[in-house]
Image (cartoon, rainbow, N blue to C red; front, side, top):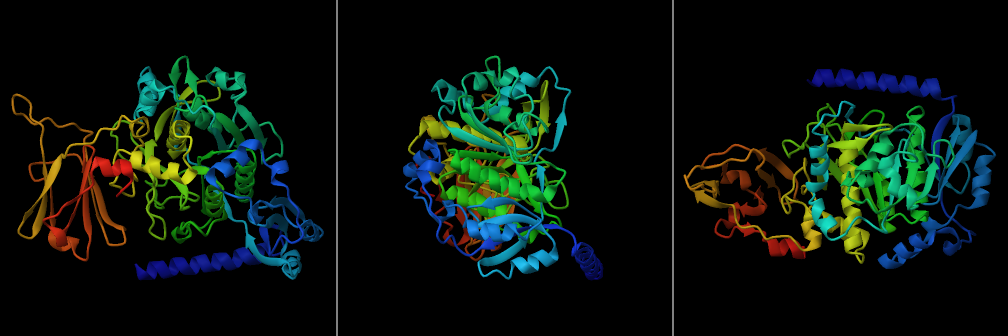
Length: 546
């Protein structure tokens, strides 16, 4: 194995040398970073829309230097040298340029330039596959994809995301301007703004239908049936992906997030994933990629960023993609509607620096609106907008919530909470947490210590015939976490006997915790505290004391 690794490393090094020598004279894409914004005058009220200003005021967030435009003299100095200066980022205090190596050498000599970074992110949508052969049972799945989040409780309370503004970043929205599924959105003028960052135009109703599918999972309506939960929300539609010039798409995402901030987005739904071209897992740490930095900065400006985990779960990569690695991004995994657990392709956490991801999950298989007809689609591309619609409803119901308070409440609402793992996060968000219909679960199991082993004993429900009835979707979830809350093991079981789970106490040394979830009830066990099992009650869950 060591020999194979060394050979592979040598091959990569040779490839890098060849790559650098072959492109040194060619134009490449770079970020050029400036050291300050001296002498810049800025009036936020003349730049930001009223909804953006309202969001800042509500969150107690003031405007700062990251909101200010760039120093124009710096920009002009770069423009005179670079082959093409095609974007200015206020947040990064940087410009995106295309130039060759000799031009870069001249640029870095300027005293106001603090750094240069190659643009080398590769983007793709987090759609796994589509199935245009939608069967007669599509209506059942359509209802389930919102009801799994208890959507009927929102509808009973007339909650549909009304007044909440959602920005969607995607690859195109063909048919949204004509499809009857979006008729009420058009007629009520709830598409506030659109922009195609690839072509520099406002028309986004062309190109890849992926964005159309995503929008339908938030706000589509078929007759009286909701495809998503936020059928009353407002929208900003941004086309950021082209798939023909991949290294420009990081810039497009950056441009879109600043545009969304300016135009009053309260929620961003992004079903896009970015990787470095060599796919190093160490880069998925929440601070290497600029899109993850931008996601965190958007959160600091009061926006809830909701993003897909990616579809690498059944590949050699398996890990999440950026910006799902961002600390302040609500990262969404996918579950199988039939099995109600992790769907095979959904990427796994944790991040490269061992932070817990995903945060929550939803169906990774959904009925969506294609360009001309309904389709069945697979991917965390669709679990993400389902949660975005949920978030809009939760925000409508609790208007006073700041974005990161909403972030935490969505986690607390999830059906596995306070249990978590690297496949499901805290589970599927539940509307009952926000509508007041949440019921405190009764204990469904107990711990018993026998010698040097702890056993989980299930409290079986018996029929009048005293026959134990098993439900294939009533799973036992368990993990072992170390003292840093990093999971050393997690598993989901759906078959058990009277002694479901037996763990040697030595496996729980050094303050490790065994945490178990079954039928809404979670309890934890420490070997050092055998007589005081640390149960987390429903009351503590609602209060956030965990």
